[in-house]
Structures are given as structure tokens and as C-alpha cells.
Length: 453
Image (tube, rainbow, N blue to C red; front, side, top):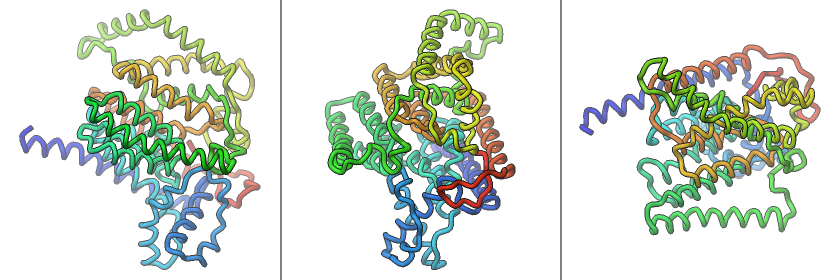
């Protein structure tokens, strides 16, 4: 490509990213104006982050003043260490404990900006597609708070690009970033394994396969060693932190919630338009779609049966869902899941359509890659009794990166605009429509109730 064309292509990718970063910062300013105090999980994460930062610089007096409920924190401390450099600069300048907005920037907003830039460098991923994935509602919302999901997402995207991107560097660097993601969110152990196995299957030579086995296999041995030490020797749970409330389950419906969330919030509905008639007439397009429906009715019946069985045998209701009226998931369970079996089944057709679109979206990938994706999704979602859309971020990311392909620019732009509008509406409800709620008994939280994804 001639130099002027390369410069123009770089600007077309860079300018949308700058606009997205500006929107992120404006959203963060809006959040700080309405909710400057820690909220929800931040009540645990921010004191823990400050305590870790104190420990790094050996400030025992400040560390002792911080009340940290380590037993309720179910994530590794990797995110806290990542934010320490920015926190230390604040301490040098102001001689004070880092405020919530600084941790929100360090752990959430800055990592999402960096991850979006990484996504734009993927083959088959336009600037609009990258921003659409970055504005997947649970991910975008987490990036405004001191939650660990966004940093793990950024590290995993970096690991993926170094292993399977357009210009991969080395499996060793990919393995390092994969381990860093796992040190930030425990579930990324499964997704790091998924990345290593899919890279091994796509390797073009024996030498490349050996490099992948050495790099990611070494990380795998580290994970096994931790499991042996934490579970078998110390007698701990497979989950960190509050194991009593995060015990293992057989929550097959969680996979249905994921695929439906992907269909609605991550633009999975676009799979309905992939097998189109190109730029031909509307009539020809509708004829092609009608024929595709006629050919896939048996699959739809099969998927409907699978969804109905999962609803019947694999639905779990966590006590948190019954107790909390701030998450939208609470209202979903209240009106569709808890009342009775019949109302649960009304969503089975939607689950089946979502699964059909997911399979259609992945049809360009290899059979082994699809099998590994199904397995990784089940391993991370089925054991979890609790339903939180944030848990769907890794499988959504893997789905989009695995099946990344050039889309029509109009469709990509529409998806991006819809995601941005949805993010704005949910953020407006969160910040501008608080409500009174009974204070939690287990923690002091003077903030009003706010609706959250």
C-alpha cells in the first residue's frame, strides 16, 4: 500500500478511537459528579487496592487504618498492583490515599481505551467493530467503576493479538499477558487455556507448535501448581474469597443467558443478515432468508429442545439475586424466572434463536475451535450459581475475535450507534434516577440505590 494510503488508513482508525476516548472521559466526569463515593463492589475493591498500594511502599500506618474485608473479595489482586504506579504518583503529589476516581481511571477507563486501540489492529476488525465490542454494555459499564473486568479484558486482548493477530510477536509474550489476565480475573485461566489450544491448532509448523507448547504449557503448569497448593494442600475452594456464596453448581441456563445477551447487546442479531443476497433487491434478499429458514427448521426444533431441557434441569437462583434490587438481572429473575416454570419457558424461543445465530456467526471457524469455545464457555458459566452480565465478557470477546470478518460498513456503524445509545441510556438511569433502598446489613453504604447492568 502506498504511503499516502497507509497514512489515510491510520487516520481513519485513529480518529474514531480519539472520539471514543473523549466519550469515556466525559462519562467518567459525569460519574464523578453524581457518585463520587465507592459504589457496590467498589466498597471492597477500593480499600483493598489502597491497602495493597500501601503494602508496596511499606506504609504500615496507612494500611492499618484501611478496613478491608478480604474474605468477600473473589478476584486475585492483580488489578490492584496494576494501578499502584498511578496511585504512587498521586501520593507523591498529594500525600493522601488515592481517591475512587483515580482507581476508576487506572483499573477501568484507561484499560478500556488501550484495549479498544488493540482491537482496531486485528485483521477483519474495523474501527466501528472495535468500538462496538468495547461498548458491550457490561464491559463499558465496568470500565467506569473500579471493577477488575476491564483490565482483564485488556490483558487478554493483548495476549490474543500477540498470539493470533495479524502480526503476532511470540507465544511467550502472549503467555505472559494471559497469565496477567488470570491474575486479574480468575476465570481467565480457562480462557488462557482456550487461547493456547486454538493457537496450537492453527500453528503452521512443528517449530511454531513447540514454541506454543513451551510458552502456554509453562503457564498451564503454574495454574496446576496453584490449584494443588490452594485446593489440595490448603484445603481451600476452587473459587477465591467468599466460597460459601460462590460454590459450584450445574447452572446450564447461564449459557442461555449468555448467548441471549450476546444476541441482544453484542450485535449477535447481525447473523440474521450474513447470508444475504449482497447488494441485490429487497425481494431477492427476503427470498434468500426465507429459504435459509426453511432449511434450518430442524436445527431450530433441536435447539428449542436443548434450551427447554436446560431451563428445566439447569436453572439456579442465587440468594444475591433475590436480595438485590439494583441490578437489572434481579428484575429479570423476579418477573420471568422465580414465579413458576411456565413463565420460564416463554423465553425458550428467544434462547433458540440466539443459539442459532451464535452458531451461524461461528460457521467460518474450524470445528475444533468451536468445540473449544463451547467447552470454555460451559466451564466458566455452568459452575457459577450467580448471574452477572460481567461474567459474559470473556465468551463474548472470544466469539468476536474468533469469528472476526469484514462487515458492511453501514451495518457496523448501526451496531456501534445502537451500543453507544444503549450505554448512554443505562448510564443516565444509573446516575440521574437513584432510588431509596434499605441499607445493606453487611456493609455501610450511604449511597442511594442505582440501577446497574
